[in-house]
Image 1 (cartoon, helix red, strand yellow):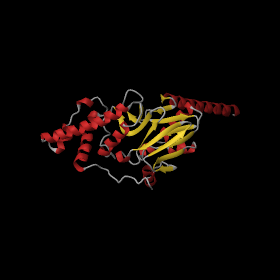
Image 2 (cartoon, helix red, strand yellow):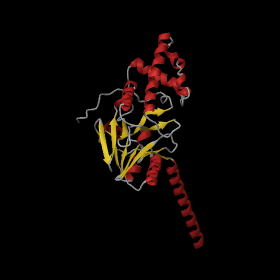
Image 3 (cartoon, helix red, strand yellow):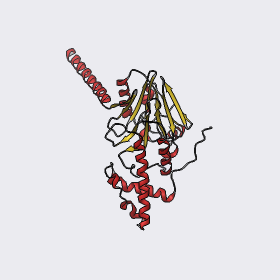
Image 4 (cartoon, one colour):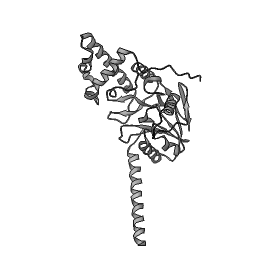
Length: 301
């Protein structure tokens, strides 16, 4: 009986080691070097995170949910022995802002723009923890181990507290939701103000970066560039132009979503499925005025 118990304990230990090794290998396989000290983590769940390794610790961006966050933390552990100092949120939405407890347990300080912080406080979710700080400014920088991560608040473009990130020295950018490479807009384009989105994209274009990591992508490469930002802007402009052209032809309002065609983008993901939904949303925005809308935040408070 003693030998049997020892055998079973040994087998259990081997199984545990095998599971841990499998998780470590998966974390390593899902990690891509973007620039010196900058990495993306894309485990195939439709979301991509980024982390920055410095001589004084790690900054992680976008936890998504607990399962994704565990994988991200494993990937960081496979890349460096440095502790995670900060976890940064891009905006408020539940599908991006979950999993924070994983990093809190690892000792990280969690930050989000105050708009996102206030929403998260008012809209709790079982997989989302309230950040340690809701910063209130147009921009906030974190300098760690000689590396500066710039956090740029880009206004009401999408969700609340939408923040994009630039690793200054390496000229690497991280953008959530505002740009998805090689894909038309997301379904009915929920919680986007189209006019303000275009403004935000122009602000991003004006910043200095060479490489860009997007939270969602249908590109053939792990990361992109400023060209992807420009392509998104041009798609929206072309969509607006096509809608206006149908109005000028006298096409009935309800028939326009199925009349609009943009052959230039027919190879983009979800073209057939989502283009009519894109037309409905953008057309209604053009007809009713930009929505949602809210006053600009008072950064003096």
